[in-house]
Length: 245
Image (tube, rainbow, N blue to C red; front, side):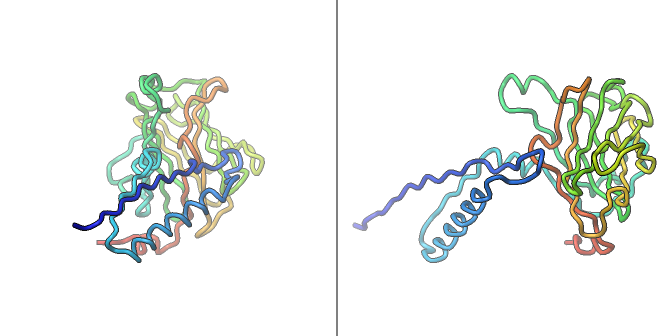
């Protein structure tokens, strides 16, 4: 008869979320500690291949993985509030999830999905309403604000979401006034195009942002619920580098 050795390991980390106003991580040791431990687990299995390991991922992490995809190609979008399948097929997507809890689940969020991407000149954003046509779901008092962590200090406010051509203004500390070169349209969906030159960014530089929907100065929804959507200004060979069979 052979001896059986059995060990139970319980390993837990605090959730690792950035500080939203600054987009900084106040306790970097959390991630560093976790990286060290998970690397150590893998090396242990390499040393002892006869060991069997089961690694469970937290539901909060799985939700973030499932909800978020990144752009896979350059977009060719007409800003008219009427999206077509091929216009946005290579865009990134964030599927909005409501707060946890049975009571919260009964309240559907106004915006169901956020699509984002770019061509070589502009950042594109598309928002789909949860209940029908976008321009029929929002009124004169509703606002969209796009806050940029990177490049820092930029904020774009979109007014009159019930109009076919909503008004856009720069309201951050880095730039103010009418956003003349920003295109926006509301119809079946909401579409927005922001020139990279308006943000002062060039090839390879990061763009981190989140979207806030508010009515009468009260925040109704934040997209994403935590952290930011992260992308970067593409290079001319972006599609070649992303291509795969």
